[in-house]
Length: 636
Image (cartoon, rainbow, N blue to C red; front, side, top):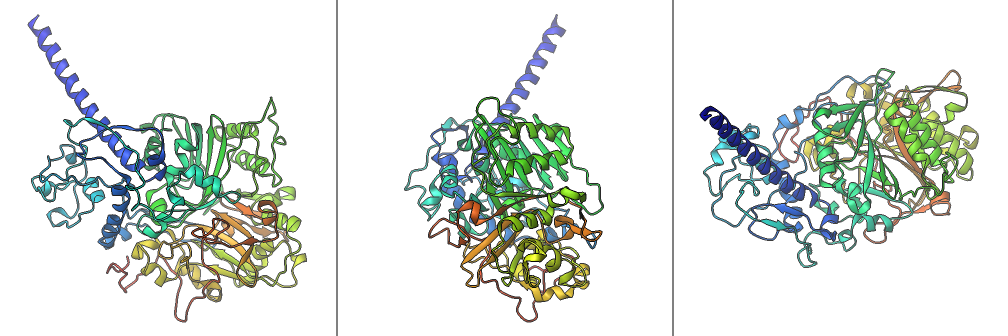
């Protein structure tokens, strides 16, 4: 009897301990979710309060969180060379379209820093010892809350002035409700009136373009961009209640992705992840299915960045350029096309022809999904058929690995663009240059005629029959000096894997290179991972087209013609959207505007483009840099 009672007491004690740990973890998760969510301005505008357990002794505001973003710049400034050297390099084949496979991220997960309390003392964080030790030990001089939260600092446990105590570790404090930020409280979070509106509202105002760039955390000027977004904006409940979704991407940090879904209250809904490279174990996350996309050809990648979001009241497609990793969203310039909400077709219509747009976007998207031949994704081809895409005004431009002949040759890659241009851009003159802005470059041949102008260039103008001469191609790609002076210093080149070996085979490309400049969008110092292709008038005031895509400047991405141009060979999966004025605005050209003055059509880079100055050289990831960057570091 006594033995039974003793066993019961031990079991009860164990139960109580586990319950206490679970409650503590729940509090930490809730507070973390709130702080991460505050990066999205929408949550502060929502009518729904979020109940969170925390020990804050004052009313939290978004202002503290957003201003604390500046602290991250101080942290980045103090990064050691080892942060960049962690990027693993690998050889680049002549036709390879490649991104850095190693650790791109030079900043931690985008946890909004915990506000510092006004108390002179704070309790040690009992959960801190669960975190990895700071590699700098007692010599660590970092004051950034993100760093203190990410790593354990034993020497700070009893240091009142430098306590690393997490702001939500004290279990004794009451439940509080997150308050909506008043106009006075939020005055310092943004100087742009439009930026204080919800993303759903700003998306509606961006019609008919629906084209956005991300906000770069360490470049605070970008936080006010009316056409800027952060990841939680896209999945926010104000955009619709998600039923299930698909994330197609190259590099996926599963924890980072799931954290965003948790913040946006969509975590318990089915999520399919089609990936090329995965960090994290899918077994650790419920309702998440991860499928690796196998590539049949050497040096090919699953490079597509796309989201399919099914809501209770519709379907949305997002085509973008960011890997699902924090550094891509936090520190690199990325592009996003966010579709309008496509409603469900009335009645029992489910044909691919029903609810089609003038650009045939629905048909092309379904064809692209079916090309994977993956059962988990194929199911989505049937889901898409049920929705009305008639409001879609852009073309879908995809690449699928394979040898494409006959009618399939014009379905993918640059030949798809050539077909569209041939049908809808016959009045354009061939004398205007084409701007190719990219983050990586493959082997393009012995001269511009081999592929750059003679193949891709002709497709971007329509066809050889429309051109009296080969089009001039201007390539916007960061120089070494652009990287050195970037917001991340040398680490800004972590997403730009062009190699010196490849360049040595095509030095003719130097005459085509132009600097990365984006002063009008306030992101010259935020290195581009976006890829865009455009053609402008002689005055550089209007654009004849724009392609925003995952496709870099390479044959692997766009394809190369073979067998006397009867076959198109593509190595990689890619996805992008093509904007033609005829379908978007009903005009012949897009008028370029500044989003700070009049929301309209805006390019990610400045025009006219700036040629490399004498002595400048492109950024090569695989060469040493002896000159110090803006933070005093050399490379690697």
